[in-house]
Image 1 (tube, rainbow, N blue to C red):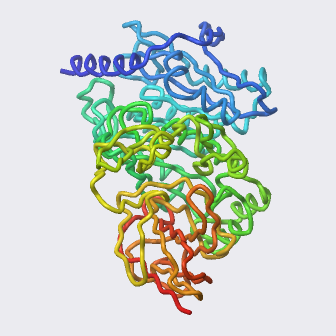
Image 2: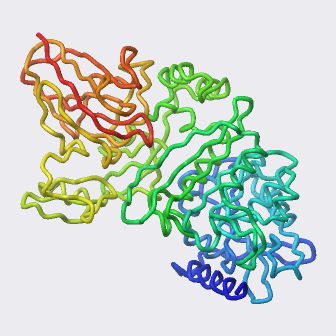
Image 3: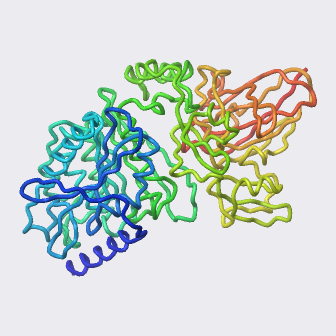
Length: 557
């Protein structure tokens, strides 16, 4: 039975390795270590700054470095973000499959010093290419992920952070893990993974060796890293057709900056999200974001998520002092004061990684700080509803230019009902709204890419404007307009009001948390002119903040 399960697992992994076969774009480079000629490929972006970061990306069992280089998005992301990525090869086993020696039961005849090889390779590349030892990281898939855990236990002097994707720890490593220096870890697993079993395999029925359950493994690392506090959120289900959703648990401590990020793909298999399987996230982008955040990246200091590090970020950090922010966050924000964070900008049918001001100058659509052209489709693809009630999956430009109603990037005609009146997930589909209370929901809403900032509402914690919906209101008076979700919704809301049209929005007011409202709901007032249209945007503070309730509009002379 064990041999049969091993063969089945090999078949699954081999099929995944061949999922998208493409020609090689780089040559293997020989590297001598421990009497063996090892190999690696490397990608060095043009115009690389001095002391750039280095990422080692490790293939899975029976895979190879060419597959990892071509099919996981690391090359494209390295070009965009300015880091070097190297793709080492494992050695071959008795079945001619490449592997990393993590002591599988059927590899007991091998004694490959992969720990030493990968550490020595990283140090070699740091010296050869002038890379930053304090920004050297390692990630991997499946067997490569298990190698990441092994390095976290044994080679933590060399690597500053680890991102294992769908891996486990054999019991032998579990009982001997003793990192010289504790380092942050991002780990991802799926509950329906039939290769790396979520419930573990302490009886070794799979023949790989005994290993604990994934929840036990995360608790184990939370204990090693001394990160007892947990913040749980759910990522937006942007692709309901993939059969899975993503939960993120972030483990921290008030006493130090170590973190454990645990992505659990509910219903997920033995997948690299964003490449196959779950499509609500991109594991490559998430891993790099995690690595980059270790040294105070722009998006980490941009706690309000508006793309600009300014007084609003500092006030938010002070207002939430100790939960979750501390002196390190404050110093980082002050050091980066005035910086504008880049993100993906769609313009002219293409994409550029630039800040919001540069995107506005090009007349483009900005997708928010930290977004990536490796994951954003420009022009955006989604469901388009036509006047006759039909639906077409097409480019946003084609839809809007021909009078259609574009329902958002990532939507499709399987989940969009074009017969539903008043759909208000994007600015161009804003609901007409009058005085009084209007019921609404954000449970199925997506994140709009329209810009906003909290300069007009400092200290009210405007947040990320997650899963937002839109309304259009014609003022019935010349006087003061009240817009409120105060105590009449069931989630943490953000409010932003604009004048103008959807292609030229002029923000006039905003509010995150009102001092006089419970549960972080919102309340704002501003001057209006009778007959003037105002666009009202309601969203959640952060991913996971969705719900329903009422929006109150009152106009007083």
